[in-house]
Image (tube, rainbow, N blue to C red):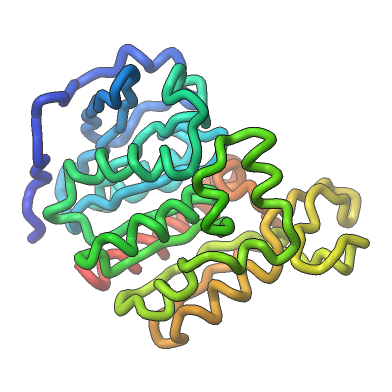
Length: 291
């Protein structure tokens, strides 16, 4: 049986969150939740630790996507909690009402610094990282610094040029990531090629579409489009998914493709509980196989 959750420090642990009114989704957790406040110079951020009643694996560390707080992935994280797998997810500067005011001119590098501080609370035991969308890019940078991590879950992951990680969110960041094929200018592919653990990719069938099929240039995203009368959002270039898959040896890669789903996987899981059950089962099995 797995050990009980142990936090590296209990100085900033709370049983309740005064920020709850700012959450994107105020939904009851299926078990215990704790809140960790971290001070970063002149601002602070909060993380939520979901603690299962009976732990079957060490808690995962989760990095959410752009415009997300730590509740966006509730449909997955609550199911993992019920299955005996806890998680720690931090609010990161620049992405949600709950993270305001946050850092001045935040960037991916800022978010990585914040993530490192939160991760330290569970670092002695944490072996699994989960990255969602923009958080996938940060996850890969964090994993490269953590030799103890042996399982990575990437949910509709983004990858950005290494130089874009220093660009403040807004026009500077947009300009830094808009170069066709710029996403290949990242050392994360080299890291994945050398990574000795396992990787699970969860991708919607309408994300990562071939941009040239929809009148866009190669090495870019298809973006917003209408398919069979339904609006779809495909911000991830096809070449990103292909490059990630090629970077991981086949024996260590598992892919889960979600039908009738685009980049909005979190919303898809929220609106289709049966699919959320299946995705959570797959992720739980992936984590428990290495527990």
